[in-house]
Image (cartoon, rainbow over all chains, first blue to last red; front, top):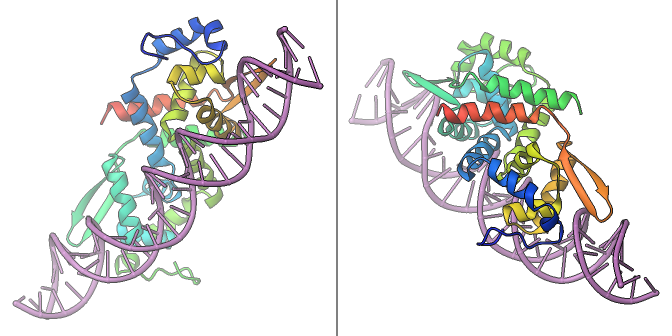
Length: 121
Length: 121
DNA sequence: ATCTTATATGAATATATGTTCATATGAACG
DNA sequence: CGTTCATATGAACATATATTCATATAAGAT
């Protein structure tokens, strides 16, 4: 769309002008769509998906998770940081040990919806 | 976890041995978790999220979408290919024009769940 | 057949991201 | 206080991915 709000790609954009304008009106703000894609991006990594799934069952400390997936403590710690920043996990400290748990009860729902899509492929 | 099924990270893994084993049993297959993360990865891009949202409202051709988001036809076409491979969109040809539409009624639910998380941050 | 229009695609480029390695921090304990 | 254990983090590296550019394909129009 140019500055005047007209479309000048191919002739389709003229024929479909009204549809494009209608869809344009109904689109959420850029910001909202960006945040949504950022959330999905966080969930778009096997390691993070595994961590979240593990935390569905029980809170766990960093070395528990490392042991469970046979990955380095550092790799897990980096990913927990990402999950923490996205407010998907929270933690509590008990001496030297830091226990992580889920911080969002909706994530399970997101996973279940995702699995429905996978099953139907 | 080593080949014998024992954990040898820090002492936590010995203390928490039973929890780790329980969680291990309850984890879905690697394959399933991989597919789930792959799905989220597809949704983890602003352009693809925008395209999907647009298609909630109406089927659209490639140049309509390009015009709507002021992006090149090539960029949109590449992303539609990705979405097509993930079975998230389907298409029909009408002469020279190819119309894309959603191929999964669950995607809307995924988006709604995602938005709930965003709202509560 | 040739030209135009709409779309697809391969290669190249730039950027983002996950893991590793080395090291820092923070807490308990002798 | 120095040591050990659990975790965090910065830098480096390797890989993945989004867009651009040039070009190919596919269908209608002249």
